Amino acid sequence: MAPRILFFGYSEVGYDCLMLLLERGDNVVALITHEDNPHEKIWFKTPAAAARERGLPVFAPENVNTPEWRERIAALRPDLILSVYYRHLIGTKILALPRLGAWNMHGSLLPKYRGRAPINWAVLHGEPRIGMTLHRMVRSADAGAIVDQDGVEIGARDTAEQAFRQVLPCARRVLARQIDALLAGTVRETPQDDALATTFGGRRPEDGRIVWTQTSAEIFNLIRAVTDPYPGAFTDLGEARLMVWWAEPDSAATHGRSGAPGELLSVSPLVVATGDGALELTRTAWRGGAVPELRIGQLV
Image (cartoon, rainbow, N blue to C red; front, side, top):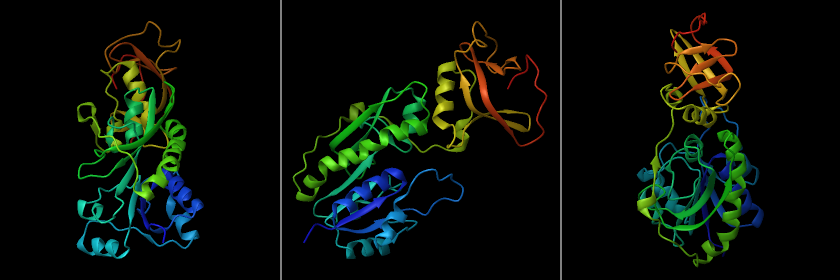
């Protein structure tokens, strides 16, 4: 009998990788996933619909590591666990169940950007290259030995969503290259160099607050890392919040302009001083409170 695969997954990366297994006819016994968050903009495909269309059992526990769920997972008799963008840490008692191991697809070129929201963090830090990594799951998140990885170049003006779309095919390519070895138990692994590792936590809407003492490039990278469909970058003025969906760090309106960080240098176009120059805010929206009257020289 073909090895029994238990798939933990969410997001469009999870959808693509689950579809690869189903198209191959692999013996996927169940999908463990998440319920969509009503407070989150769901702009990506998720694996649940694809699984249900094919009669695959779908579970969405709040905590997979309870004794009850460990028993239910053990009853599924998985030979191999594959996790793709599953958002919760899977405990070691579950990881020890499958004879062929437990493996994860992570959205970075490990060991860099371990943790949550790796693509957003990579864009925020101005990385020119991002990727997907297949690795063994261990107690520490994203720290297990690497099986394979694939990457793409991204542009200095790409948003996080554009970067995600470019890197998305990498996950399916990596899994396609390695799935037969995973199922045969012959996969090769390379330990990660922990000295090169960087780790970041999940991002909250509040993390989009603009710090005007940063450089224009740093603020621009924040804006493109969290712009729509993510919660967005913002600055407050009184009771009102100015959402900044796009900006230009090197436009005609910013050349030669400087001032105290956060100072309005121009109202039309809207130009704000940064730590090393100025930024033109080209796509904005007000939220909450009365829209204030903007004037040159005031601070945001």
